[in-house]
Length: 351
Ligand SMILES: C[S@@+](CC[C@H](N)C(=O)[O-])C[C@H]1O[C@@H](n2cnc3c(N)ncnc32)[C@H](O)[C@@H]1O
Ligand SMILES: [Zn+2]
Image (cartoon, rainbow, N blue to C red; front, side, top):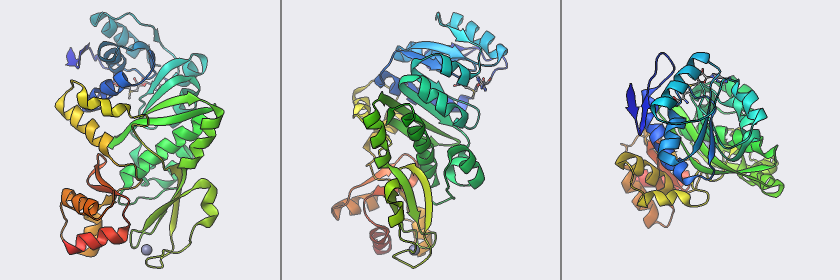
């Protein structure tokens, strides 16, 4: 028997990954702030996430796993934790087509792609997705990304963010089929996984507006120049880099808008009594400025053949110059800023 958060869990040969504890710790704080009562843990395994959602965030959980062995273990774990809840033994997509829940959680082995459509259909208020197919999302496995996410990307030096925006774009576009507009509540990439929490709202008008934040990253492999362009303006794309003349790459379509704290609720974390590391991470996430595609300071310095500079100092310098700038949870070497690559290179060379 092991203890995670307020839950006591028996594993007994069913999938349980202790490396995902921090992710579940973050989730519990986020769940407290997200709307909705009924919560489907659609790929439960031991049921740890749904059990914690009940004990720590006051959700009314429903459990599901296609494996009979997992269902047996979930039922035992519910008993141990004094929880009464329905446990389904169904294919998750089929269940989500049949029943609706306020909040649907999709935590699969590998890619969530097969479950995005049914989750968008089933969820009345919120959806949470995990993805561990990082090679497909971040541009290492180009064909796999095309097959699963209908998106063309290659690996760039800020690949964790590209992967997150590919997944976010797929979720946003799948939801609009059901006239649902998504707002990103919290999303991050860490170690071997991506995690995205969204709030959905049924409105054909708002669902159409989603595409204002959907489009392409235009990128120069040679000099790291980048810009982004809305899907409706694709024909206005330059074909050559305005800095160095190299042929530009066009990656996407993907999500280009805000990736977190859409309604400002994440800022409540500051006043919450939660674990220090969890709090630090969520405050850092909340304080990231809303500008897509961070600069990887190490990579820019390497190209310039100058020694790497501390991220904090560069952020301060950018702010002094009147630009917006922040760190990012996606990379210790990352800077988010509305300054151009020319400005960033100027600073890295000067100091
Ligand atoms: C990654 S594990 C879930 C981990 C769990 N959510 C946690 O936090 O520990 C995925 C689970 O999904 C189940 N599963 C795989 N494909 C499924 C499907 N199509 N429908 C329902 N369950 C499925 C597996 O049996 C496995 O227990
Ligand atoms: Zn260039």
